Amino acid sequence: MIEVKHLHKSFRVHVRKAGWLDAVRHLWKREYRVVEAVKDVSFTIEKGEIVGFLGPNGAGKTTTMKMLAGLLHPTSGEIKVGEYVPFEQRAEFKKMMSLVMGQKSQLIWDIPPMETFLVNKAIYDIDDRAFRRTLDELVELLELEPLLTKPTRSLSLGQRMRCELAAALLHRPAILFLDEPTIGLDVHTQEKVRRFIADYNREHQTTILLTSHYMGDVTALCDRIMIINYGQLIYDGELAVLTEKLAPYKRLEVQFAEVPNVRWEDYGEVAEIEDGNVVLRVMREKVAEVSAHFLQHFRVHDINIQDPPMEEVITRAFQEEVPHGS
Amino acid sequence: MGKYWRMFREFFRACLVEELEYRSEFLGNLISSFFGIGIAILTMNIFFYQTDRLGGWSYADVLVLLGVFNTLKGLIDFALRPNMPRLLEHVRRGTLDYILTKPVDSMFYVSFRHLVFWRLIDVALGLGLVVYGLAEKRYFPSFVDIVVFFITMAAALVLIYSLWMMLMTTSFWVIRIDDLSFIFDSFFETARFPIGMYRGWVRVVLTYVLPAAVITNMPALSLLGKWNISTALIVGCLAVVFLWLARRFWRFALRSYTSASS
Image 1 (cartoon, each protein chain N blue to C red):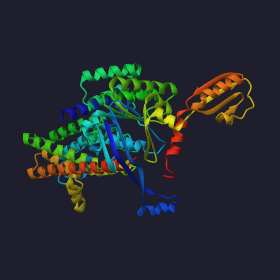
Image 2: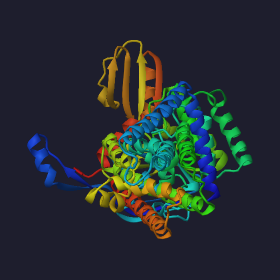
Image 3: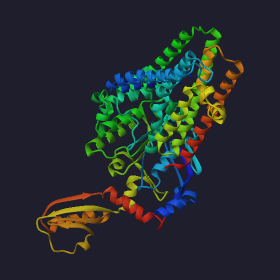
Image 4: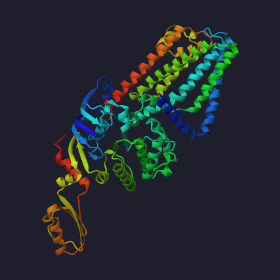
């Protein structure tokens, strides 16, 4: 569905120093610096996949996504989405994809979302019956019924996001680009949006590429993730494999009745010790042995074994896989 | 073409709903429209206390010209002016990305997405003034007069649109849009008067470089039966050339937008 080969993108930005003298000099003499935003990125995404696209701010996620959506010209390399080359901006291509940006809205501010839907109906040339059917489905899945007739400006952020999703899906795109779809939403609404995306993908086999800062989005939705940093793709594969590879330990949390006087380093790496609560990072193969030992020798109130949080894993990925500097 | 017409109707409908959110504006605008045209007529009357010809035009001729001016102004305020500041917003906030992912011509979308329908009052008042001017002169335009009027009027609209569009497109680089509207306004104001009033280089500029005067003078003259076919053709060609230029410029701006912005 999506095929990317040796994608590069560099921007020319002008360098400016602070101070008015430089501001004046800047008027006729500009210094430019070339910033490589995306360097030699290649990947393939199959139909129906949900792929999480991760990386710190400025890593090149959005730039790559914009190139896939045809908004930016690649400096070099090949992109094919479906049968199309995105930056040619063919109408057929635009009809098969959709873009949702968490920080930018396409809804008309002063009037109810339904009006935006109708405008999109005309833009995408959707016939009445197909429109009705799709809208009914989206209204049900996203629980939009009470929102349809309220002016957009009076909706909460979460309500607005749900309407954004509906507006983007009315023409039944085969590919959906989601750029930070849950940004700024509360936990409950994030959960709702995630569930919708998962259901929708299952139902319609829509290919979804998702960027997010929230690990929750990624762990809940994506089997496969791609990590990009300094413009380079540093990991592409299953989420579970990454966790195993980069975090060969588990998080062992033990609540002791009274904290025993032992050398914790013998069991694992100490993450935190507070009152009777001890959190250790214990190598996977030793977890069973260590917990059995605790239970046998000490009075334990509670014991809890978990995978390390995603944030920790990703941070490690950035630190370990990336060559020094940029 | 049919699709674009349907889309235009949908834009109109959505904007109507949007405008009706603020109903009280309607009355205010009705009053200001009447006031505007009233002042314009009064000004003309003052001129004509001193003279009975203005740049070779009689009082009734000037009324027709004023009518044409008002009609065009109404159409600009109806479709063009509301869209201009929005393009800037789209560029600055990045929502232009949404427009570029839509399967429509982006120039069409940014030009006509927002319509301020009550500005059509000005159009109606302008046309009324044209009819009144003709009645005053006791001139009944022939069928051919009217055909030429429509052709030159269409050409005038295309010309204004193209000039406006080019100005609008500069918002990819220019940040203060108010100044841009001001430039257009002062340029368009010159179209209120007969071209014969201007002398020397001003006249040359207004005829050939920034054809403001041509825009209103030609349709008015046509309706008064004083057209000639070669000028009408030239205006038509000029309109096509300007439209082509505007389109090229838009494409150029988009290209630099899509290859540079982040």
